[in-house]
Image (cartoon, rainbow, N blue to C red):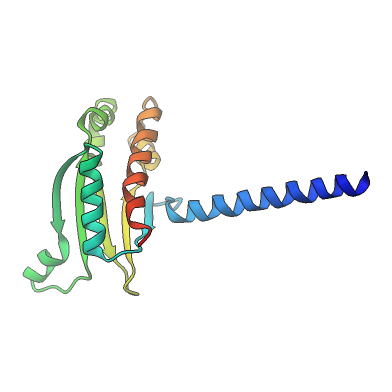
Length: 164
C-alpha cells in the first residue's frame, strides 16, 4: 500500500515536471520580454521561405495583407548595410479597429506589424509587439477577448515557420 502511494506521488511529480518543461519550452518560443513588449519566434526556415509561408497563411486565414517593406533593400539603396529585415503589415479590420475605437492612439500599433529579421549569428526571427503590452501602453481594459484573439492569430501565423 505504501509503495503504491509512493509510486503515485512519483508519477504525479513526474507529470507536473513534464508539464512545466513543456510550458517553459512553449513560452520561450513566443513570449514578450517583460519591459519592451517584444515577442520573438525563431524561424526554422530561411527568411524568403518564412516570408512566403507567413504570407500564404495570412491569405488562407482571410486576413488582409497590406504591405511588405524590405528594410534591408531600402538601407542598401541609401548606401547602408543592414542584415536581412522585412516588415510585413497585415490585419483584420473588424478586429483591429476595435482597439482603435477603445483608444484612437492605438492606431500607432495597428494594423499588425511582423518583422522578419536576421541576427548577428545568421538566425532568422519573426518579431512583433505583444498585444497585452499594447493594451497596457494604450490603457485599454475593455477588449481582452479581442487582444487574446489577435495573439492567437499571430502565434498561429508564426507557427508556420518554426518547423522545416
